[in-house]
Length: 501
Image 1 (cartoon, rainbow, N blue to C red):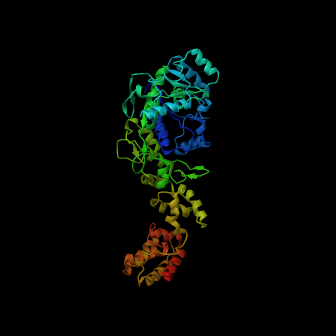
Image 2: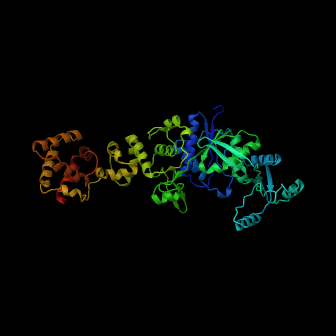
Image 3: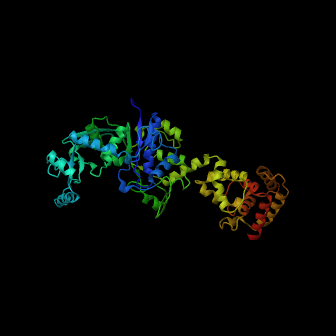
């Protein structure tokens, strides 16, 4: 690539960042890093009616949490600032005027009522009203009135918009990095509004001007923007600017059925569609962070939604993704979202985590239960149970017996408590009472030697022993549990099981 790669993520602050938007940000970030380029964040807030307080900060925080923070944005390396469109609005009018002067745009004075009337007339005739080449000279535009009259109407404060004058009878053969050649007939395009009389540009004009001024080399965005590609390419041409390369990412699809993944799917099936919790007066929409997902896991599963490296490999660190990412390996077809697979990814990253770090996250949960445990023992407990968990929030249910003696016993497991079990458990208590080195390995050796010497079957002792300590036939290695709860607690629990069962 001859010029420096500069790519952007340009969300509108209209609410929480959808996971599809996060995937777009991630692919831009990875493409920039792969090509020693710049990834920048621009906030597109020209539509002030849809602006939601807090959304901009949410976007920034989400990208930071995921480890894909932009190289340039508001307040950071503002080489081409401002990075907020509402602070750039003084720029756009001159470019709208330039299009008027070059004959690539025109003023339109049609009222909302007049346009609504045209739409209804077309509907009555079974047609769709499109504002373009076939009717723009029959409507209330500067194409059919004099320059003087146009100037008078604007000066008098009459409402107007500036529309793009789409070329007639052209076939546009455009290149998309992911989709290859895509064709558009200009006669089927409408003359989009570029600028409004309130002094604000529409998305299309602001987006093109900003991408040009910020030297964007590649536009990597969702498939839903593909229909805008011909207008954007035509705008670059009208200005005499070199257009960036385009890549339109596949949709993220629902876990079941067809259609784009939505918040409703998440609500229905109990999984988040936002990176972080989003709080409103109506309640909280849950986020991956607060659900206990690790940022590395979220990045990994999002990277594989529509991309792979050509192998069966599934686990990639961010650094590996930066080295391997290639837009030519992004699929055209939509990628199905799999909440269960996402949990699997989180499990893979959870078990790789340092036991000390996980214990720090688990400690507040243990504190809430009003039980005390040494830091060292908590670290050891975490090491014994994490292989069975997808989230730290599951640790308590997997380890409660380390802290609290069972108050009930699993009904199915009770069948392992036979008529001869109480006598065997009493013998076991005698064996345990004599042990001075109460370490897992030593206890196991002594207990197994006792069973072998007395020709007692493993199942006759080990299953009732576990049931006494845990309340069920679950948990990590039995003698690790014995060591951690200690001799006194082990004997107490066996005695309680004898009395209860």
